[in-house]
Length: 179
Image (cartoon, rainbow, N blue to C red; front, side):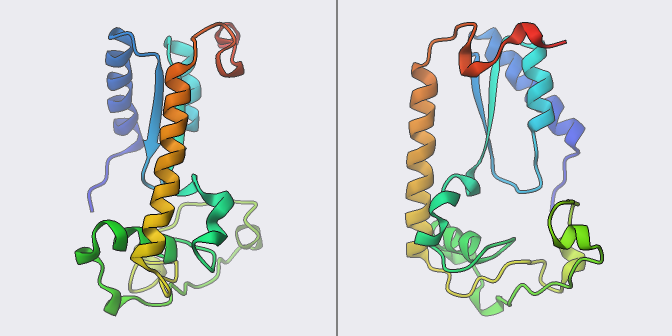
């Protein structure tokens, strides 16, 4: 696994965004592909400093309102949704014969179990297969249907964003209120 610190990642993104703004691109979507990333603070700070409108999209959440149409149980790391998408995109990389239940020990703290407190998880310490999701029932067909929905929604948003006029009330923000 390769790791890049949050500071390094944000420095790279800042340089990219500066370059895009220099080339008169002011509407930018950060399409996030990893559950450990959160760019909320970065977006808030960057939008206040630059003439840019930034958005974050976590691809796996795009179809969450229709999740039950594709998958029959809640998901987590390496679970049914992620495995289905992997089967649709890269079936040769999925080792279904090694899949396990994704069972993990419960959190020590009640607040974490109730999900009103969050923490980062070290998957390598959770169990011997670094998963917290159950991939049973995963299929390439369900993964492809979910990807179709996700891609259609993201494309629709990008078209809407592209066609939107930049004005002082763009996406209900008022950049003058930033420190």
